[in-house]
Image (cartoon, rainbow, N blue to C red; front, side, top):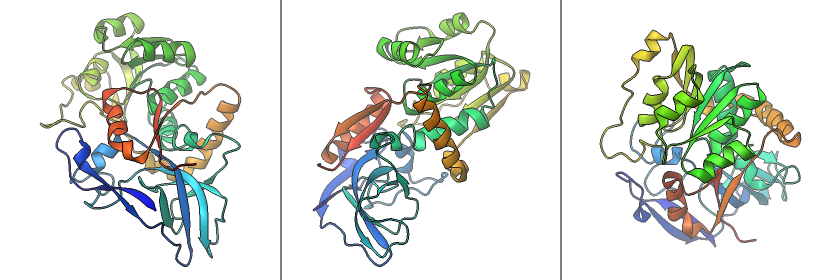
Length: 334
């Protein structure tokens, strides 16, 4: 049987267990030109909360009754005359939160479990890594000597952003929640400094760590942290708006920045980014990041939990901060 997590209720505020319904259906048979993929892991990302809203966005909202949308990685177990994939191939794509998916292969691409563990292909070598790569290099336009501030710095995207900035010769400060995460980004990932927003006054620590201000701010959280960062930007600074996890579960309106006039004074830019805009260049990014990983310059960390039935609880870790690195759920038994 194929266990599938269906999206059945649009949440207001945090998504509770009643947002989804776990069902079992027969494993699909591939139609002409299709393959069936046994999914080993699915990706849990903050963006998934936005996909649940019935609102205009960069991607269509999920329909009620559909399989919960998610990136995935797994193995081809059945083929019906497919031109690209064969049984035994490992592939990554958007298979959703289910144990098996039948697909014509659109949006799926081959991966090699001998080169990296499968969860890495939905982490550093998947959408979060692509987001970090193009966000900091193409939108942030970092250059050697820049002072870079990253929020959500111990997360899937932020941790990679900071490491790439270090590789490119920048001074990097990360904002994270708790001593363990702050120690991780400094001692293991090589950040130059860390700010514990749960136990320190962010504004004061930012002044101490970046006395001359910041050139690039990569924002994953929005809200008050964005406002504080805007107060410390330098001339011609670049602010990359990647996400706003502090705002996704708001029942009221989203809180926007009060210090936006700092953009005017400093002739700075604040630009939103969606990783899909660079889809044609994913291969380039994966090759470069794979090289950095082989050289020991880029580290990848996945927090792997097990059981498709544990999706609601595991999804909540995105917003409680109770995880480190990329959040991944193993959905199929070996």
